[in-house]
Each structure stands twice: as C-alpha cells, then as structure tokens.
Amino acid sequence: MCNPNMVDAATGGPIAACTATSRQVTLSPYGTDDEIGMLNAVTADSRTAIMARANWSRVYDLSVDNFVGMPGFTAAGDQTYQIWMTHSPGGTVVDNAPNADVEQNELVAYSGDAISMYTHTGTHIDALNHFGYYGKIFNGFTAREHLGSRNWTKGGVDRHPPIVARGLVLDVAALHGVRTLPESYGVIAEDLQGCLQRQNLSLAYGDVVLVRTGQMALWPRKAYADNGPGVNLDGARFLAQAGVALVGADNLSFEQIPSMVPEGEPANWNAVHCYLLGEAGVPIMENVVLDELATDGIDEFAFVAAPIRLRGATGAPVRPIAVPLS
Image (cartoon, rainbow, N blue to C red; front, side, top):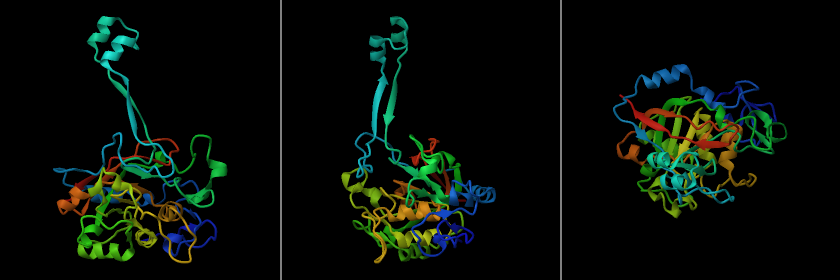
C-alpha cells in the first residue's frame, strides 16, 4: 500500500498520495538523494517473483512506431517527430563525405540518418522532473539549484533503472462495453475498482498499472490527440494510494484532456501529472499499445521496459514489453 513514511515537503506531514492532495512536492522516504520515487518499490525479490512466472513463448510489444506525421503533444509548441537522411548511397558518391575514392564509395552503399523529436513523443516515460509545483520537483529539488542551461541535474530519466515488475491492464473501455471511451471522459477510482472486480485482479505494492481507454483505436488519426479520455485526479489518487510503481495508458497524456480538478481546488491544466510526479513520485507512460493484450484476454503479465538514458531529460522514448504468465 501507499508508503506512510513519505513526508510532505511543505508541511512535514504524511505524503499527499496517502491523504489528500497538498499541491506541494513531497520528500522521499528513500533519502534526500532519491530521484526515482516509487520505482524503488520494484525490488530484487519482486523482479524474481514475476520473472519466475513469465512464459517467454509470446512477447507483446506495447510501443508505437515513430514516423513523420504521427500524433503528438504539440499544444505547447513542441516539435513534431522528424527524420532525414544524412548519408545515402548515391549522395556519398557525389559528395564523398568519407573522403574515399569513387570506387570505394560506389562499393559501399552507405546510409545514415538523424532524428529530431520532443522527448515526450510516441511511447515514452515521464521522469519525476517533468512536472512539480512552484519551481520544485519531487523530493524538494528546485529549479533554482538543480536546473542548468540544458537540463535538470536531478530527477532525470537517465536515473530510471530498467523496470521489471508485475504488470496489469485495467480495461476501462471493456468495463463500459465500448470500443473507446467518450471524448474527455475522466477515469475515476470507481472505474478502476470496477475493472479490478470484473477482471478478478488486485493491486499490489510496486505494480505497473496500464489503463486501457480504447483511444489507441484512433491511432494515428488526428482525432487520437483531440480531447482524449484519461485518468482524472480521483483515479490517480486511487492508484497512488495503492502504492503502484509506474502508471501508463493508451492515450496521448495519460490524464483526461482537458484536465479537470474537483470543485474548490485551484485550476491546473495538467493536474494529474503534477500530482503523480510531484506528490506521489510515480512516473507516467503514455501512448502505450494495449489492444492486442485486450484481444487476447491478457490482463496480468511480466512487464519489462527501459527508457533511453538521456541525461537530465524530463522524458524519453521507451519500448515496453509484456510477457504472459504461465
């Protein structure tokens, strides 16, 4: 369950994930240097236990492919995915970039390319420095002290270890008997509890929980990124209070778009991200492919993933896989 030893950075009281939201970042129970939060809940024992049950005769790839024109988060002006050739067989003969003779360049069919992308493009993981409150991120690290000209020196995605854990899909679309949830539908705790009951599952400390909204059925059309369904604060608090290590969903932003907050709480255009990353210390995955698992009736599995180690970055592409259990 939720770790009651976590301490609110502002009040010195229990972690907000264990009570109500504080809208202040939380101090980690894993020490003043901790940068991975609830990923600490994935232990050698939990990895060994789930891998002992894995049946490697089938592996499910949970990632999208990246291509020019793919849907992405561009609402705040971030760049789209781009790829271009830096070397081609014919071009190498003409420009002789390797500084070789014509015979060698004709013999060696040299191709190379480069990409440019927002680090939160495609199937990716959000690090704990992606969102926080008032210039601070999880564990009390501040932009004033820990953000340089290029990147954060704390809380970056390069700190994330390879993740091997018990994974669950909570199929909210199936719960409601729809192909995809309605536009801007907010997934609440009651939805997630309903999935657990319907699928005969229970949450355990250190789990990876993936929420299926059905939105991936719209990929890669523009509608995929428009006001998608997703988890709201109520649902996020439910997952954090269960002590999950990582969450993800088959939509653009994990959370409901536009983000909603309960009546009486301050407006927040990305409330779930601020809460999960800044208060609960739970990283987030987005654009996760879950339809094949749903079709095959697999809702519990060994989850394996590792983000690209981009030093200090707020996120990075990740290629998660699901391995069914024996």
